[in-house]
Amino acid sequence: MARVYAAILLGLTLFTGLVWLFDRLYWSKQRALAGVNKEPVLVEYCRSFFPILLVILLLRSFVAEPFRIPSQSMLPTLERGDFILVSKNSYGIHMPAFEFEIMATGKPERGDVIVFRYPPDPRSDYIKRVIGLPGDTVTLHGYRIYINGEMVPQERVGEAFTPDGDPAILFEETIGDKRHLVYRMPNRVQHYERSYTVPAGHYFVMGDNRDNSNDSRIWGYVPEENLSGKAFFIWMNWDWDAGEWPAFDRIGNSVE
Image 1 (spheres, rainbow, N blue to C red):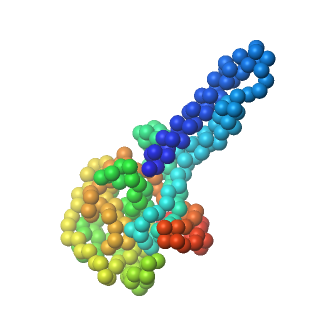
Image 2: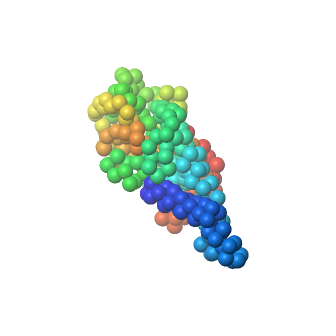
Image 3: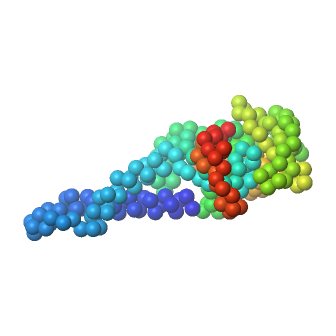
């Protein structure tokens, strides 16, 4: 959906800009020769909206883009209904709507929380945490994760409950230099016994809600060209699907 919105925004910006430009270069002169002072309604609206649309397009394409979290797969880091900002220049500058790279600016690191186009259906946007980089071997052994033969440190913190009231076990996990919390669901434990070798130009990702996440363990790797950006900030929370009011205590939290 993000690409659809981007295409609509790009189209509206181009349309209003071209109407304004043609008016400045041609139509306004024709009106002056005809003694007409009143500006057509279409031109007036395009002249007013073009700068606004252009600023929104530039900010959304090259600085930060908003996304809404629709599921609980990233608990406890992100809750359903969180509205987040995603840095659009962390992993490259891309052409608006078309998403081909204009300039390389960086690559995902282990532990980054990324938004990407879901490989089985690129029309959908997903958010997960990067576990394996290109060339890594990720081995899952029960609760444990091994990256290139080294166990990812994981320490039990205690017990907790999800927003829906389901019991969970809280762990602190360290990937690279990043620490974050993950959930294990004792009533739906999923044990994976498998190794994955991440291909070049791809990433292995998992949700922080480890027993309730549709991620690389199921559908494979994220191609680099599917990356949208790095999540970094929560600017609102409103789970209206559950009939809840906005949660103001979530506003302003960073995404670790």
